[in-house]
Image 1 (cartoon, rainbow, N blue to C red):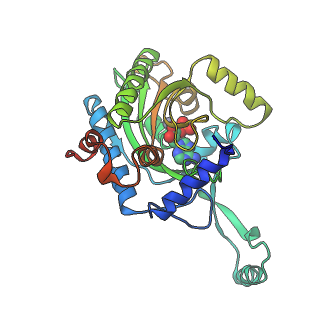
Image 2: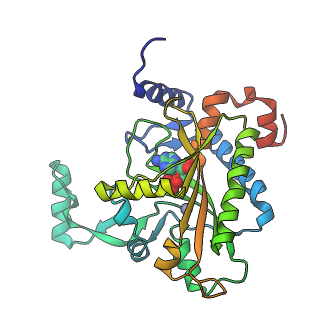
Image 3: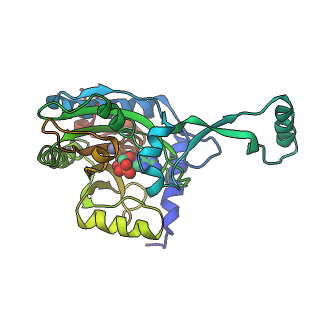
Length: 310
Ligand code: AMP
Ligand code: ZN
């Protein structure tokens, strides 16, 4: 086998996706348009996730891809992942300031000095706006709650790996309740995740994982997360068989969000939370990688699963 540097597969696949028109270049790594076929595959997978989760009768909520800055500040995200966060800023100057801004742009100077933070930040994970929302409702009912979320998310991690986007969609089921309720939910979904991958004829591997916590203190957090088995990922080879890509995540936050937001159970104990995240673009990319860019030629069973007909 000829030597292929790690990045070669990623670039070749990204180029193939551009050539097929599935992804559309914008000039920014990790920021792409999607064509109708790509969106159809995402919509069909989204629907499959709904079918797999229907028995739990989740409450469906859709938040926009921006969330409240004050809620974001309270979430602790900036402690763990300052490098990934994206904030929305807007021009806050007067007319003279506007003239300066236009001159700066015309002369190629930095023009962002007069931009000020708005009350909105970009949502980093679909579940972040949920916890304060649930807290405002008061104590949980007996048996806890289950939510179905989906949002575009932003993470500042520019990359030539098509599976590492800066703006992508995350579908989530979020279970909030007692430790026993949420851990049982997560265990059930780890099994369902395997069934999902089998239904899509994708190779997979379920493994313990950690988040990319920032800095030296972050390494300890990451080790702790792994040691306690708080994060598992469903890995699928997409752009490298050596370094597989996390397509689904199973996160147990313990009482992190319950404490931060003040969510309590009906027994007045701090609620625990868990979320199952489905990376919609990543699953679509895995399907195109393994079954080809021509969906008419996909295995009949996979077509049946997604479109209801071979
Ligand atoms: P996480 O909150 O990091 O566990 O992410 C949840 C899911 O979102 C992951 O399992 C991935 O499928 C997906 N995801 C995370 N980061 C990215 C990214 N940069 N580009 C595309 N999908 C992502
Ligand atoms: Zn989540």
